[in-house]
Length: 421
Image (tube, rainbow, N blue to C red):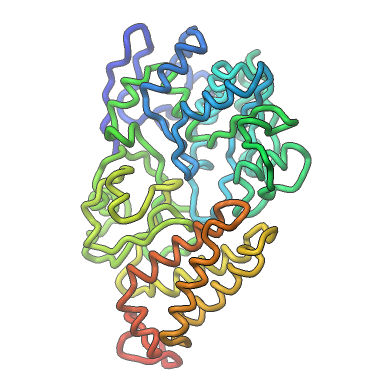
């Protein structure tokens, strides 16, 4: 699903044709170098300028401009920066970081070295799910010299990859978000300026260092450059089942992406969850032609997040699916602040009752009110993401919400709850 230009900036390497991140046929070092070549020996300032030209944004969920994070660390580092590859991937519905680390670990490690060169960092960490550590350790064993990278097992749980949780874990604390008067780029690991980047962002950075920012931006759109990795689930697949990972051009319409990935036209689907558990439900086929870009998705109040897409078939209940996710999110909070300790469990309880057809209009009003009360009040963005998911479900499945208030369900419209299913 990619459409890749193959002309690099003058003086840079020639990129492989076709896929970018998954171009190498195996993860070995020799194959990696044969496929991508080595990184040109240029100055940190030249590397930073190529990142600026590329328009690269973070692929971990927030989509923050990578050049801005690099510059912030440089400004605060005073020669003592730390760089971190974040491969925690705590969301059960996402599989793209794991697939990347299995198939292209050297791209991630190259990107970590590039980030260290740009920021002047002498210390680097790879913060990874434990089952992925052997793939990275094998890759490290194949490399000679270069930056010393310490591998650290990521904590379990949905919020373990939040950047303050990452820093806490690397400082020998729990992998939980923490309060701080300082931003991570100012004072992170060991009190030093710290760059925490998702592993896919670093892999993209390794490509930019080789082929240049103009080449990178030749794919995608003006406001969403390059390709991105998407975890696309099969229709009816359990949410925690490992799904297929695709490399996709930003800007492609949702319709051909879903049709190619799930093997059925969007007219046979009722909705798709974009952005994962903290994402947004989009109605289908109404949103079928939305471009997968920042500006395209903004019209529906959505973002790509970490690239998770969960399509919903016509015979499934969107409210029941959402209730399952909200219940998980309530259990997986850090439980360190009021919105997570009290607000999310209450939201999960009431939304589950709605999904079961056990609340009326006042219950739906209570859900909306509670969602508003948790927004913007947490130590991290976990309550905000949960609220966004809930609001989009109430909007996208509005017809079903009305039926559920009377003990019925659009997926089983002929029968009340409690009957045969």
